Length: 209
Image 1 (cartoon, one colour):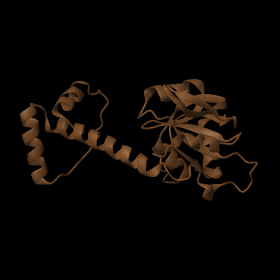
Image 2 (cartoon, one colour):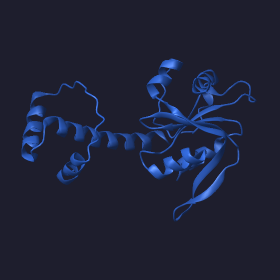
Image 3 (cartoon, helix red, strand yellow):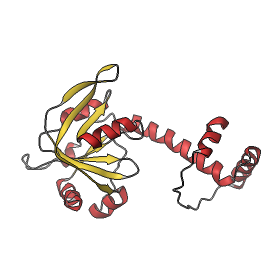
Image 4 (cartoon, one colour):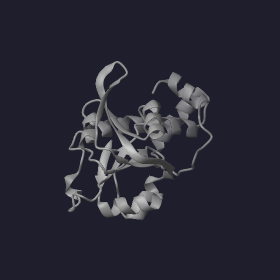
């Protein structure tokens, strides 16, 4: 992270913060104090900005490593194929606010570029789709119509795959913490798309009503 970026971020800090306790090695604290003194800012501001920057890098690396496997975990397929499947789809807000707004405003399940766009092709008519916003939780729910549309992403031909969501509705954010508490599971929400067991999906759907 450049000093210029640090100063810019410092002037744009949001009011919403939460106190946390963090223990660091003494020599690391000494370096942080030297750096913060040089910039004329507090130790807390330096730590907060570097944590944010490192977290963004880690998330980007995780997504690159984790999003290439089979988009649907068939190990949790329902025994009855006529029963609905329950799928979480990330709205991509961390990478594009426009993509996020497009999906939640229009009731669209979409993914962009290779290999993520092909995940949409696996959705079946009637699958219950939970639109998941990183850092907030489930913000919308609807059922896949089963028809994948292939559209351009700006100037990039055919890089958007999407399906319309039937009976779509926005919902009050239902957080990852609340989802884990309700289902008693430790879901990995950083995947672009993943499917959950029918019993867990049904619990979540009922909670959102």
